[in-house]
Length: 249
Image 1 (cartoon, rainbow, N blue to C red):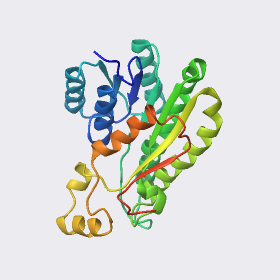
Image 2: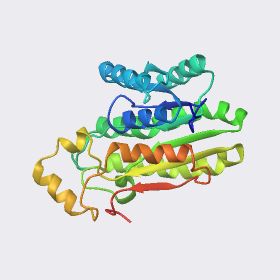
Image 3: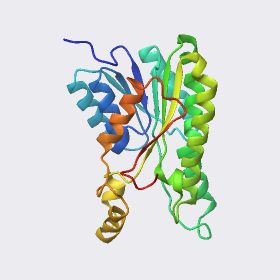
């Protein structure tokens, strides 16, 4: 059997049980990586992802952790390193939204989104970079959003978190490049996941009308970009990979 591009590498994907995170975990496994599947609540979906990865001939472990809590993020990284010995790839994908106008938004709705979408990225990155620096290699991919680039009505918390991810990415990329570590942001537009599928058909039509490509993206297209950044994309760092069908340029 020919050697795969990510043979011998360990990838940790936060929020990997569903949607884009799951697609990323499976895509990296297809290319030879062993996977740490992180989830918060949906154990059945996490187990299903693990089975799919094992059916590809790779190895995966499941670690339940709420990465918006620093101690949970610490436990996640420690467990992964104890099992596999290292982490080569970190995909900071965990995220939620609590959409409401600024005037009506509760403090808890602001804090929950900031902690889950933005702070969790710092908690996990802060912990993995020590080992990456020691080995002189690492790939960190932060799952931002088109909303962090252009803003959106009723999503000030989500937009702030996702824009913060982009700024963090640029700063960390400058710090870590000399250690062989790349840090990039992937900024998907509207992707056909459960969140978009749940929208009213009229809203979907309005959104598609704003996308020059005339369709929503797929989780697999996002995952392919993540995989590229881990394989051929070694000269990309501090970049924003904008998969949005031309909706925002």
